[in-house]
Image 1 (cartoon, rainbow, N blue to C red):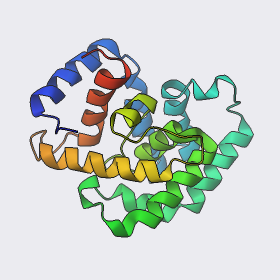
Image 2 (spheres, rainbow, N blue to C red):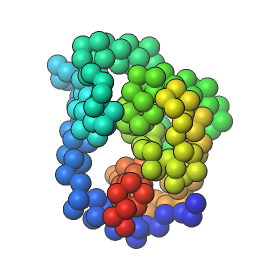
Image 3 (cartoon, rainbow, N blue to C red):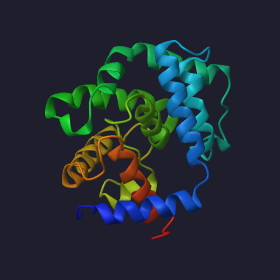
Length: 198
């Protein structure tokens, strides 16, 4: 896949802002997760993440309940992997190395069995927004890692992370220090491959 240019990212950002009002929920969930980690809000991390899952991953919940048991299962996974998640939260995808494979594959598989492959990427991204990229079925296919059945996608996600790492490296610092390249690339991917707005 050819590198995404800065102009393409800028165009996608405009298209995304015009057509996707649900970005509000991403911004809210991102801030809530940060506050929950800092202990500055009464919400749990699972509740903060649910803000995004219920809006950006609503298709997954069409035939599944987002009930107290689901919250408890999500909380357990977060508690189980909390140290790894916080360590990844301090990193950027550019620091991804082969030594991260076991931790990433374990994390993704554990969250995927509860949230599905798309929900797992969203959850991990919220917990470590500069390290874990977002994907969906159309984006995964476009990057040459089409999704399989739930529980079989950890290796595909690992391969996808490397592809996104290459995209981020190609962009360099052209987005500025404050911009999250993973979110910018996801907006481009979503506009181009998911919605075909570009």
